[in-house]
Amino acid sequence: MSVRLDCPLCAAMVVDGADDLAPGACASCGARYEGGEGSAPDAVQAALVAFGADALDAAAVTDAVFRLTPAESAQKGVAITSDARDDFYRWWLFVRTGGDGDAVAVLSAL
Ligand SMILES: [Zn+2]
Image 1 (cartoon, rainbow, N blue to C red):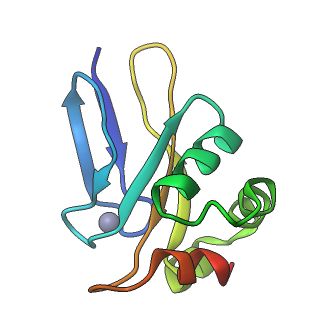
Image 2 (image 1 turned 180 degrees about the horizontal axis):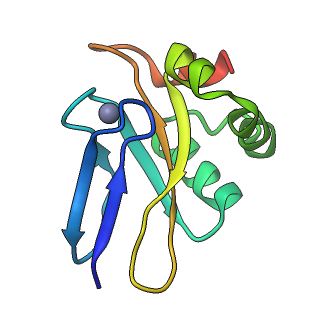
């Protein structure tokens, strides 16, 4: 198994050649990524729990994040992407809060 993940917010390579991938943060822009599920809605649901934002509606957040243009994603600091691995992929929700910013506030503003 070889996993590669690029940050959708700053385009930096987050991981390349890993055996597997756990939630973490982009070393370049500091965005946290959570999720890691096989479908985008499942990944968003898992990420909302991890970010402490599970009061938000996962379906609505999934819909909103897929509607963002790259410029809007960069401005809001939220993006979803999939990793690349041998024969399938998993989805990750990236949230950039800046310093000690609040991921719940960022996600609530979508
Ligand atoms: Zn980044």
